Length: 436
Image 1 (cartoon, rainbow, N blue to C red):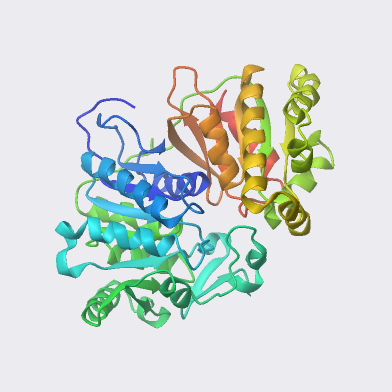
Image 2: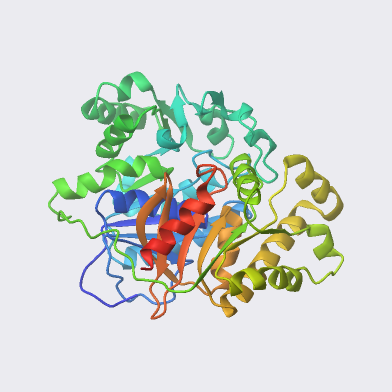
């Protein structure tokens, strides 16, 4: 971070680390210089950027803790001078009936009441058509399937068994939840804004917004120009840079994606159990070296970290990247959870991969590809990453990033469900190219 007179325009709070980089990627594509912080910074020195994204690890923690962390992030962003705020969550609306999307949204609206007053209102739009997430009549689709039939119904922490987001969100909040239907969005910005006013008049505080294309997201983004708080996935941020540009607050520029160079070895770490990451791991293993983490072996006290690092060393000596993974099928994950418990199983995987990441850095690795939101959070914390500059997109929702240290690390932090089947190879090529 650097002290500067430049004040950020947009302040964002993300409920996991890969979600934060996903959002930051969208803003960079719109020409906003973007810095991501890992957790809430201790200092209120002004950060030189157009947009700031505070990455929390709050998606699956108790709702009260998620609220407290989100409010602390909001306080820091307000001190940075941000004019508008964005609460970012997953494009598959990962949550439970207890939260945390509803409780955090309510708390942020309450905290911003001085700005929004009686007009407290926001949208909730996790749509990301580029990655197959669309919303129609309030129902979330993943590709051609309803969310509840997409595989997300088997998620070990946030099983999504209802595709109707109005119902899902209403179970999480005491606020009235409404819907901005697709036929309204199709009529354009003015009609959407009129609908916002009607919903407010009906007592709606949060409205699910339909979107089936990027064009819809641009409409919604422009319609939200006067909202103090916006919530959703990264897709709805497509239209936000244009609002600041039209207001004369954001200059045209083509250097938003520039990153500092990182030099060193490369490695891939995967902890997600998603379908996409399972496929990516399988594709890598066909031609590349890989070491699998067994959570039960970790629980038995076996030296798994040391074994993984010993496996990696001969390949690192040849400057060849390796994959170290705990990725497993849903049935395998459930079997481990039955034996260890859900929380303990997740903690063992994350802490093990975090320790391996530290060991890899000690052995000269400076470029990391990490799959999974929880895994990414554990790894960046283990590597003592404080801030990230956001660079160009590798795959939809996944940018290259680099730390702002004197000797930077390059990282690609991937949400479990994102990326093509050859993502690991593609990301390494991208990080290698950025280092030259």
